[in-house]
Image (cartoon, rainbow, N blue to C red; front, side, top):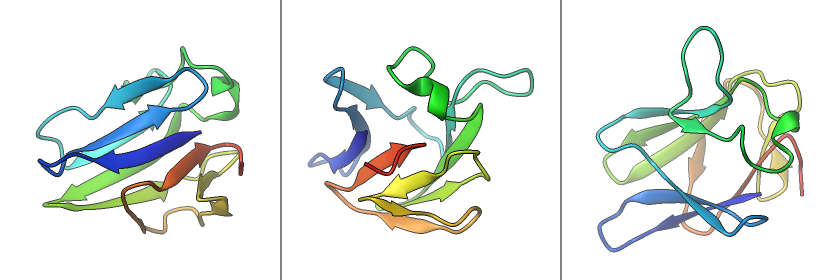
Amino acid sequence: MYSASQTAELTLELFHFQTNTSLQFPPNLSVISIGKPNDQKPPDIDISGLPDSDVSSRIHAQIWVNGDEYHITDLGSSNGTYINGAKLQPQVFCPLHPGDRVSLGQGK
């Protein structure tokens, strides 16, 4: 389970609740991939070392950054991407807001 939050500088971070870990977004990217390492392209945010990462796909989701607007899309993952418990449709953009809970592969 992850939570999106913004700081005063309008930067986004993901927070992994189970491990109390903050996952910083790489700077200066407009598209940020989330997943586990693969043969094609390593993810910008690697979640392979986190608990329950087995439910996430190698290329699971992407976050699109446009100024201070953030959107997430599921990339057709096997177990889905959820925002605040609601499952996203694959390839459909969903806005992210401070405090949103993002779940990869689990709708909790």
